[in-house]
Image (cartoon, rainbow, N blue to C red; front, top):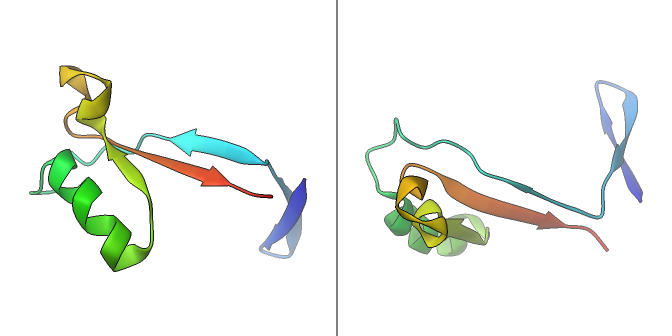
Length: 66
């Protein structure tokens, strides 16, 4: 595992994790944002709708650390 620092505190960073942020308050749909973010922010995401109809309003982001 790698480490990072937050407020001078050493934190252990896992090799990988996923998170599923709620974007309901944004005006764009999850599919539109999932297509926009890779080019604009160098982030790979999946639309929440990839996980079913109740996924609208969410994005799935993954993090991997070697």
